[in-house]
Length: 129
Image (tube, rainbow, N blue to C red):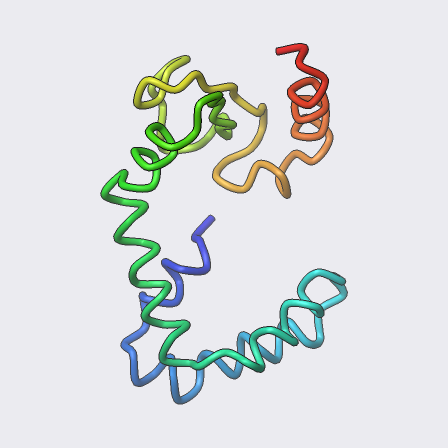
């Protein structure tokens, strides 16, 4: 599965701005998924150029591990939920942060295995992990 940000920057900026952003907006508006319909309202207010540049920056931060380092430094109680098929396969610890694996999922564990994600999230909320 490719993330939206990586998909966005796989196009050259002019192509994305002139046609791809509008296609994304159309898909979201006409989707059966309620959250995508709601997101389309925000997309309509978004600058196409800003969306592209933000996507580029998100990919850069993610691939450089800067986001994980930020997470590690600024949050005291840390648990990283990791999809079983995620590229980050560092055992039980990821950059010194305890990680829990969600079976049968990759980067988007919430969507790929909602049941397992929900069970684990409930346990975290109830402090049983």
